[in-house]
Amino acid sequence: MNPVNRLCAAALVFALLAPAVRAQEALVGSWVLDASVSKTAVPQLAAAGGTLEIADAGAGKFASTSEITVGGVTGRSETTYAVDGKDYAITATPAQPGVALTSSMERVSETAFKSNVKMNGQLIATATTEISADQKTMTQTTTGLGQFAVLSSTVVFRRK
Image 1 (tube, rainbow, N blue to C red):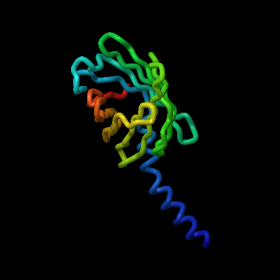
Image 2: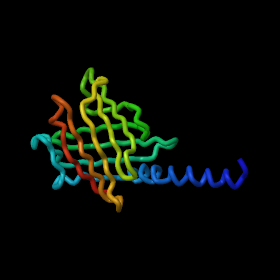
Image 3: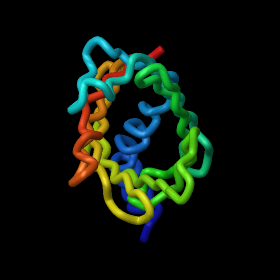
Image 4: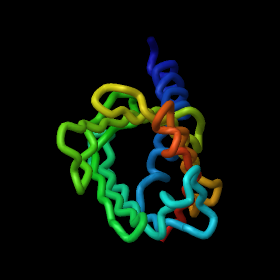
């Protein structure tokens, strides 16, 4: 391939990948739960407050730390993941003995991501995370499956 064709091919690859990179970078930042517009299937499980920190961990990976308060109890979760559809471990505090949580994420559009949440290898919920065009709002719609239907919610975060 001559140099001009190589340059054109490289520009095309970059143009196709750039929206994915921009969309993934839009996840990075500090987010605060907007409880006033968030909804849950079971009102007693509605979060009263929370934060979400997503950092670029390098090599295409992201580190996520969240703290959510439900019913006066604060829970924390941490994970490092890539947007590649593979399962990554979630560390939850307080931890439940014998429970292993994982999550996977893949890009479905320039501004949306789909996640699967598993407990001990069994799919318990799916989630769609969308970033607004101005990148100031993140909306995550979760659908709990089977006995985990109580996890169904729409949670809205505002960029801090």
